[in-house]
Image (cartoon, rainbow, N blue to C red; front, side, top):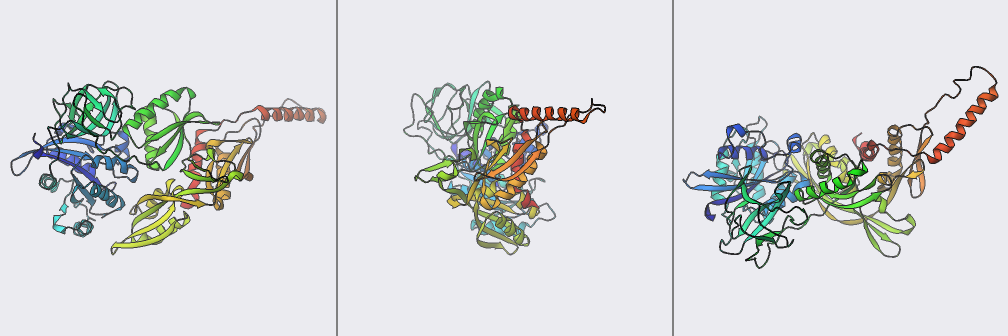
Length: 604
């Protein structure tokens, strides 16, 4: 297939605007999948994606299409996620394309991630094909939304395609637009091989399988290849394309998208963003690659059984290959033993990683309360970066604590203006401005601490606006805050995994709620267990888990009262001794309680 007849494009949209459904229709129209293989969301291969109705992984597929001009084209589609936490997946997919189909829901209109993903596509200098989807719904506003999209892109409303991916209406127009508007890939077929790795996964038989876009040159199965950054040399086990299953081919040429099974068994050797070239005729310089994303949410991941530590380490390494935004390092907790401190792009990303570890690798894990990365200025002028409350130095050494702040944009119908303002104000947000893209929609701009955003802000926003509002945020820097470490002591022993960093005004309320919750969750022992919350070295809340009582007087039928007192004294001494040596097992639900307690009051 000549370069002139190849088109590489992506589908970008806000979450739930119909990307995966449109991808299904394109696969059916081009005959890539047969009637027998038809299923909802073909490219969403993970159970989690189907359950949650969102695309988590970018996935690639190759389609053959005969256009109206009679020419046959190869279309490489890379389907992308829409959730704010997976923007990095989107940016990597766009780097392998020349065009992007921008899908907007005819009932919802332009939303936060529509604009965020559009900017990513424009930064990558892609040709944009605007599409309004779901025109078949009774509440659809196709003309109004097409005007919104046209204003956003600076084009005429007639250039915006109106389709229904579910019904298949006008979907062929999308394929024609891709062929006509998206430019063919540039690149020199005679130059040394340069292939960009935009994704990868681990296969127990084929080793690390990298997804590549061939920018220059070509690759054959018998070539010896080298990774320009990693340095590893290998002969491919297999090269091929996605149709949508992995299908071996004899050659991948300039401009094509496919995979190379490297046979490498260690996941560190093949990194997303690296460039593959020929060992005998290497390229002079690698491709630009990707800017690595900065994690914003941190949490500890520990195996429930300490014997599973090695299995957890291997699982995280394989997961990182499939999810390049995940970062982790070993850590130790007095309460939970050996585990890892992991960094995520957001709470949804953290939830997905947790579920994948449990399902795909069959691990029982405890995930501690999430925190953000703080800057701590000590009195001697030293600046520390900490992402775990357990690392916070003693209060007397601290000059100030700085917390990360974000610029937040909330897109909402005007009727929910008050509810959004109230929610953000409760979270220490600062109002910065507003715009009205249409008479009935408003874009509110705020600045707020990231710690207030990560726990359940998105859920609260959705529930208060009946699902209509959407949001996007960008990190803007660190600012000083009046913050304290809230510690939890169980049986007078601090539990580092339950510690959090909170605003001083909120410490008392959070401490009280947490102690009350833990009192319900910690099982009764044979001795009284005190649970305390402390901030700045002072106990601010306390509750006791009452002792299990054994009736030592059951065998005393009458008799002298001194005999009964003697038995009770003996029991009291035994319980006192037991309390000194007794260990309190803290159930897994207690660690999740820190999450739930965090913002229960905001929902009430």
